[in-house]
Amino acid sequence: MLTFQRFTLGALQTNAYVLIDASRTRAAVIDPGTPDAALLRRLEGLKVEAILLTHAHFDHIGGVDDLRRRFGCPVYLHALEKDWLGDPVKNGSARWTDVTGPIAAGVPDVYFEDGQKLELLGETFEVLHTPGHSPGSVGLLCGDLLFAGDALFRRSVGRTDLPGGNADALARSIREKLYVLPDGVIVLPGHGPETTIGEEKRENPYVRA
Ligand SMILES: [Zn+2]
Ligand SMILES: [Zn+2]
Image (cartoon, rainbow, N blue to C red; front, side):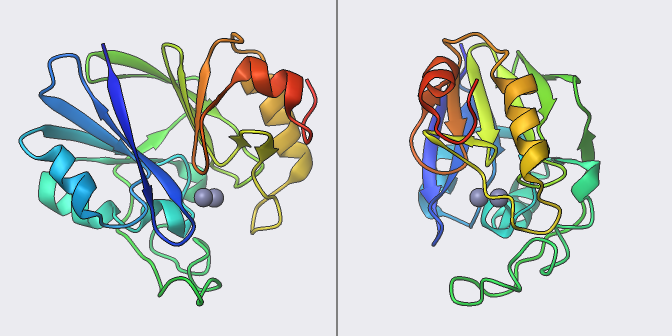
């Protein structure tokens, strides 16, 4: 069975997730926001097979090139944000000068597509394109785990005032792609604590089911 560990990184307290396969030999990393010694220690001795980005805001990508260099693994991102890794204006780091210097990383290696089924770590991950917080935001569904990025949080949703953000699109993404999932699906967001689809359908004040 897939296991995961959360690492909360950087000034914006972004959640990175280390995923580990059933044999405890292979790993993938979701949203490595900044290089981090504890996260690196967790990867020691494992074959790291992928870096998966829910979107390309700077607080999710600062550790990308360090990991890619160390492990030689591909970086996955939606094509709508393919230019963002290398562009501090697009990834937002040029604007948050009080919390970060300019952040840049090399181009992605693989592009996510909506509805795609990825075989990774002996599991199937379904890609759910959920634009609104950013145009290329995706959620990654593996069994009853949803790595949701910054689309849906516990009792909140992602902001939509950044470049390419769209509040109507976000509400539509949440209703049509996330709230249709089983109530028991565990939502692992880009910031803050986990929740479930059922809880958010009942309690989320921003997007009603
Ligand atoms: Zn974001
Ligand atoms: Zn974020």
